[in-house]
Length: 441
Image (cartoon, rainbow, N blue to C red; front, side, top):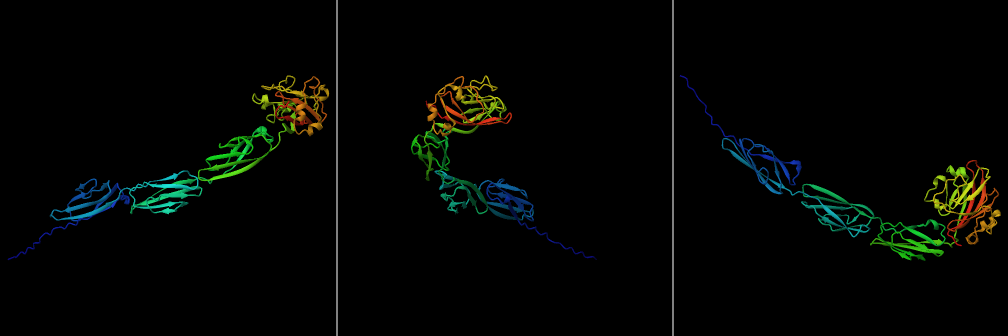
């Protein structure tokens, strides 16, 4: 007889251990927040998730993936896990999410940006609970309060204001630049009117204001007209000789500074003096090397190509030299060039000449010694310049020679010919010229 023994065992239930963790994307706890659920549960066949305040709000999947939160606060994530044996387990995690940190502030300059500059700080930051201000070159230099109020900057130049804010888990930084204008400097020069550069009264000056960081100006002109001005760059005329003070007081609303300069003016001689003026013969003039035309107004010699309709009316003297041997030499009226090789001068005027005093048969006379001794226009104003056939004749190379003239507007003058320089086609005469500034008959 065979005996059979059967060993019967009872099946045990599988335990369920609910477990998961949450990974915050980029470690950014400021909403919007994206969280990834990692399920570590064992022994379960079914899952029930509850995501308080999130999207989605729930899930039955083992791995629900990513969920998002759009509002700050504390939120519970609940996981309930089950198996076929009716075993279940539960786990909760609480997430504390922050409001977004929005860093912003205004640095408002009070009054103006001239030193000292006062800047009011208007903090517009949201979501932060810590503040660190740095004021480069400012007073104070730093602050840890939310609204530091007014900051003073005195040193000219750029100054950086930096704000660093945090909420305990993250920090943000923003900066801006405050520019302090250069310190107030009061200074000026002047520009003399072209016809007044000899500083003979009357003299007109145009002020050239070189002040820095100024907004208002007050000028004082001792003996001038006007006597005062508040313009930035005024004009002033002085009619009396001597030393005159010019004072400029500049201000920017915070500082005021003054400076005084002097100008010394001399008596009016009513004469312009030019030395070593060259007049080329016709070939050198027409080839634009040495001019044969001269203007007492512009104080320049002109070659052929330099003449135009604007400066043509200002030409006073025209010298025509025939050749390098100086066999024919004569000053011509600018409007009477038909007998020369020169082109007509646009808008030309008439100047009367006495080329040869010895042939003139007129009363006007001026020696080389008198020319040299002339320091004002007293002799010139007494001359009566009369054109005669003899006086208009060409002259030889005898030096020194004095040629007298009177311009169309009545200015009288004299040319002293000092040298005849023979240099082929580039030959020229060298002269001194004295001419009245304005007609004074």
